[in-house]
Length: 306
Length: 297
Image (tube, rainbow over all chains, first blue to last red; front, side):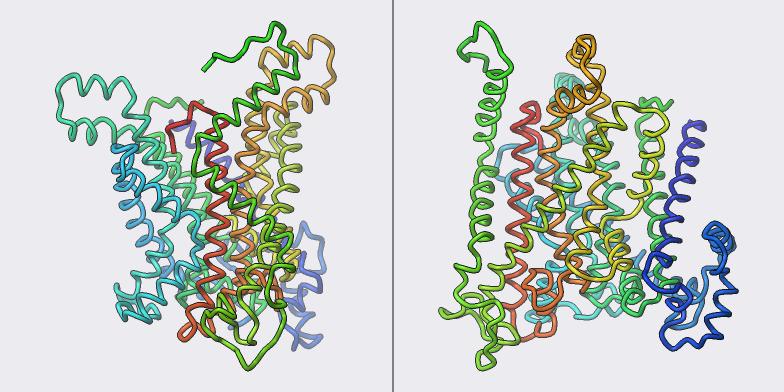
């Protein structure tokens, strides 16, 4: 197990190194002088010279990367070109909001998806199953942003059930979390369903039934425990997709989280913030994947990693 | 299941015939997928003839009739310039379908070639390629697309390039894992013994074996590509006005959101129907190509 963890962490370091090269190149691939891009249109030649010196923009790419990486590892992500505040401060202001949104979305979608999946899987071929399938197939085809718009239109504008702009209260969080979690819910439901159907065919299920256990016990103690495992992997893979979805959902609801900051940083050509946001988001995806894999190894000790 | 007429000698050609008829028979059992297929055929015809069918021009301004609700004259109502939404949504089909197919086709070809070679030869090249693809996977699809568009600048063509880049790793991985399985199979070893060249083995023997998995993924990727194009346009990074792209229509509708429900509803429905059909078709193909999965999701 230790060896496996070490190997995975080593792999992650390589991945993050490659990611950092890409992120580093973003500002240098955009046509135009990097220093001018960083300072904006009103920059004077002196300012450009200062920045060029400060970031070593006249040196080779290798040296520039080393300087940049040293800053990143020391927690110095530079200043936002839009506000002049440190990028870390800007991100810190909004980070918690996105985490909160994502947590709400994950919670409801995983619970609802699991319930729908079990419901469909144990009643395969009946009307309950078809209802479950319809919900999950639709959930995967509806774009986040459109679902959010429709939810606002019906529930906020027509029925006045929720505030249109998330105001930080729980009621304001309901719709953004619902919208963000819809895709995840459908995916979990689908995989849970097929997983339950597979597990119901296994020998241990037959044995459990043959022992005379109640159907409820068979399902909750034997079938469920085994069908949860593949679903965990899917949830991990979907979390990255959810981070992408957060950009759309935050844009629709005007929810000032990381996603909206990302869009603003592109709109206002705030490339230092853009770089760091992309680095942070990809770090999250990689870290989540590692966690899921480790969790997988814990839940399913049969799997031998070598 | 095996009550087919028996051929005394199974040549390669009629082996393909049986495979094809097997596939057709299995596919016909997938009722929803068959329906989805026919809806997609309909969408194709709309995409080809959209400018002929559309009752109005896509940029036919008529300020006297701006922001009107659905009526017999304008089935989906009109937008802020009095343009007919029905015509615009109809013509958006061509944009979405062509972007979906072009991006995914390019990604499939590039990804499959990478997967075939890395899987077959292995070694250091394989290790490096896979690490790079892992790094691409570290970006959620939409975020990667946004980053690429930020570099290249907004526009439909750049959005398409971004989609190609993030679709490649999926195919490379898929084809690589299939190649790894197939390269030690008996028939590939037999081909090798007969002196077939590596290229012949890769493209004549391994590629057809990989094909079913690629086809399924293809259908699912097209829907993903259409969704991402719409998302990018919605965020103002894809199509530019006055292109009648569905995501862009939705983005424009946000200004008139409180008064005009029809403006936001119809372009969204168009996306849902298209994406839904590709997803259902993909699921149906998966089950038809691998009957073992028949009762799985």
